[in-house]
Image (cartoon, rainbow, N blue to C red; front, top):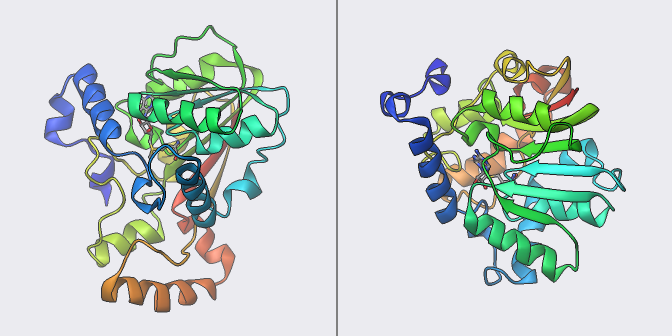
Length: 268
Ligand SMILES: C[S@@+](CC[C@H](N)C(=O)[O-])C[C@H]1O[C@@H](n2cnc3c(N)ncnc32)[C@H](O)[C@@H]1O
């Protein structure tokens, strides 16, 4: 498992900018969760499909993040993808900016905002080199991005720099010591985006090291097994029929540290 945080030979020798370019190309071609949408890409039905799937899978998210609780606050999302979470912040009255390396993602995010008559400043930008002055935002939101970028330490420094004093950073990375990482190795089932140029998993300690610029950090492991629509065949049946119900009866204090998503709430 240790090897998950060690860069491959190829990755280590790739100049940083070249690696970022490969990351951009990958995400231009692999919009997150695209395969589950039933409606044509770029339609309101498409964005609603993605929203429905995401919030069914990530039931913890609206419990931990009050999307309606930031009215009038300036929020930056790094790696906003097609803007599924960002439209929720905007609908709740936040003043939102979304950046992503991928042109395709930003194009679709603009469409998502337009179809919902919402305002958002959506820009193609590298989250490791933000083109915003210091102390520009009340909140920086980075869900499922630090683990896919070339240098997560640099991204965390940028998150800290653009936050106002007292501001809040909300971030999620994958937990290396989790039920899903273990299950995927035992069952030999690939995780989503395992073919991405960078995909790393971190322990709580490693995640805290990335967030070292922040004086106060709270980490909450989340994302426990729920039935999956993606995996079929006997592995899907065993997962949905045996593993998910069995996991549900285990006491929460025992399984809590094994959550697949490490949610961090960090303060400047
Ligand atoms: C797994 S997707 C997550 C998208 C969205 N945050 C979500 O939770 O659905 C990862 C996203 O991070 C973006 N990304 C990766 N590295 C980035 C960087 N250095 N700067 C900006 N965006 C980046 C990718 O282009 C991709 O859209």
